[in-house]
Image (tube, rainbow, N blue to C red; front, side, top):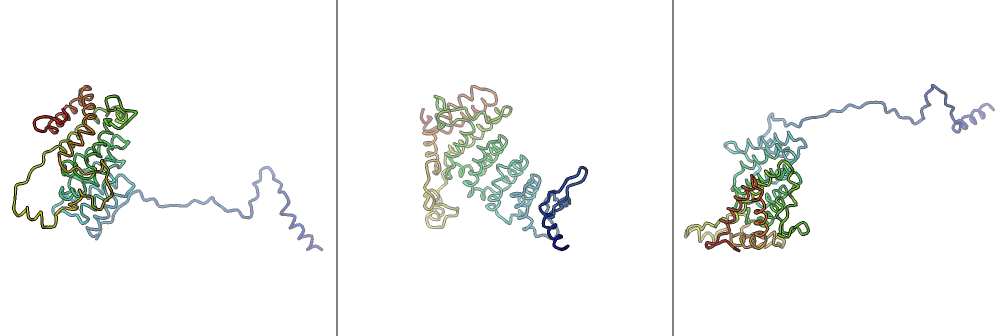
Length: 338
């Protein structure tokens, strides 16, 4: 009898409402889990490479990887400084090759850190120009992306990269696929001299809409700098071709020997995707002048005249650009289209 009453009370216990009393804590549930404990973690503030008994080639690769993938600005900067020291040393230590270095580091053209971008440009300057030329098309792709970036500082630093590229491989810059028209499009987007803007375009065929992106304090300086690099680009594009002296051996080697340059028949585009007008190659001065006159001469001259009226730093840069255009577009004693 007693055991049966005990079982009934235990069954009813689950359905009885607990009475809460003032000053006493609520009873803990049967499945209560204590979460008041604190866990300890180890935080590594700096990434480092152990340099004891490490192979120089592996150390170079590790620094290259840190420069390309590290989330810390200082680590990327220091890794780039190490690479610069190795590439500028005598003898030069480069186990990866220029192609591998460019593939890893070109995305840093639009890096958020100004010091990293400065170190990247210093690294570019120690690369052999002969090894840079085959990769001009790839470099230009990242340079054009930086030239149209939302950040004014990144746009300004990318102009330094473009200036370096024109210095070491000017002929390749203006003659590679997309190197002429696509780069002119990027310059026009920066300056606001785009004849294809449409509704934002004035009746004279150009717009100043992008000036709002230049910033309030750095606007004139940025605009003058953009026109300065544009003048260097146009000068490289309008530079007369130098005819090489005739050499009998070089003539026959050019006919029968394998070409010494990579992708010598790129202009034929035998295996690539079909190119539009902007992606086309313009390998000679005449074709570049022709397409410039048809698409850009009117817009750039109108924008340049407006910049001259502003005077000051912008006016002087526009005058220098005008001088380059006058010299570059000369043909037979006159300027094309005038």
